[in-house]
Image (tube, rainbow, N blue to C red):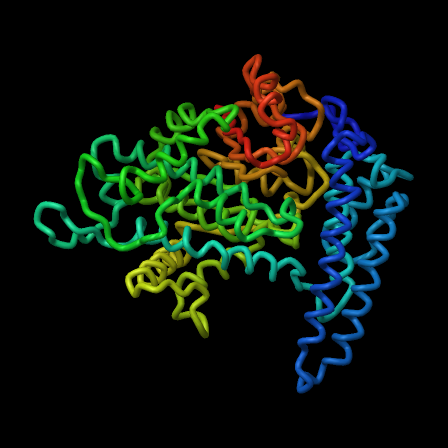
Length: 495
């Protein structure tokens, strides 16, 4: 039986906290979170001003929207003046657990005094409260427009990847069009499955760099630069098929060259251990605990598609958030909406507008293929309130409200945790020495009762573990903000 002696106010090491003025937690609470909260006010104001006059419920919706704006304004006031936490007052299913945690661990505490992890999670739960107390805005996502804008800016990379996954290729010797895509052909070649794994796993990793909770004012040029790291080619026309040079990319293995440039930025790289696990799977089950919507979700789906095509997985379970969370986290709606935008026949007008008909066809075919996975049960998207609780993942095996989730996930062969917040919750968001082994930092999740797990994370908080001696000192000379910039990453595996 797995147990843990720790709780939200008593993690294994000293908690990261906004009380430390030199920490990213302090910067987040003081500067970043007020901006995020203010954007919600702007979004709700625009939303209710778009309500059509013909809507018979417009007066009620406007009144509720103004109440939401008032509540969010009050939340910002509490945050900026470090007011004590108060209990939640809505009727959402997790209210009792949240209020019990407040009472047990943070009675009388406040934003800067509590752990950074608790304060930040509490903020997003309070945002949900403002909407949950209404009738007409209960399911409204105040971050959706931001998610949509950044995904739209990803067109070049999205189209290029779709072409490699779906567009038929032309044989270099016969000039005949093959029925298979570049990825399918690569998987079928000697060592091709392994080649594809290492390339697509890194694409999956660096997709996490686009995080709207960090990009307070998203710079589309920066977003494109982050994506260039993964896919240099913006041309998704069919490529030539030559077994000795075949890649998912055009030219001289463009994306592989680009990824290689950033290999030294992966400070702990357990891809070899992960490959040793994945290659043993035959029609297994893989669970992916999602992070950001938009381009990151897209490349997560690409990696999941690879696992299915290569025969490693016959079931991929995607775990999404039940409520709007950390600005850009994936909700079930975001998952299905993304597939719809690829399959343009299900939308009134195409979301992406590539210039070439072959590119639009590749997007459509990819959307339909992925929808087929969902319809056949190969892919499933599920949600659970545990992912938006205040608890670190140490508590997944023992928290009463999460027992159904843990029992189901225990049937998996591999857990893949995406992104920074999932990493923070895996290691309990505290001041571990950077040389602490990852398997030590995840506590009970390193047990044999838990499936193998891996985390793909670009670093955006001041906690990192699993580094070899001397790495921290080397990187500190390169960039003082290396822990929080998103320019460095870890791929950490627990067998």
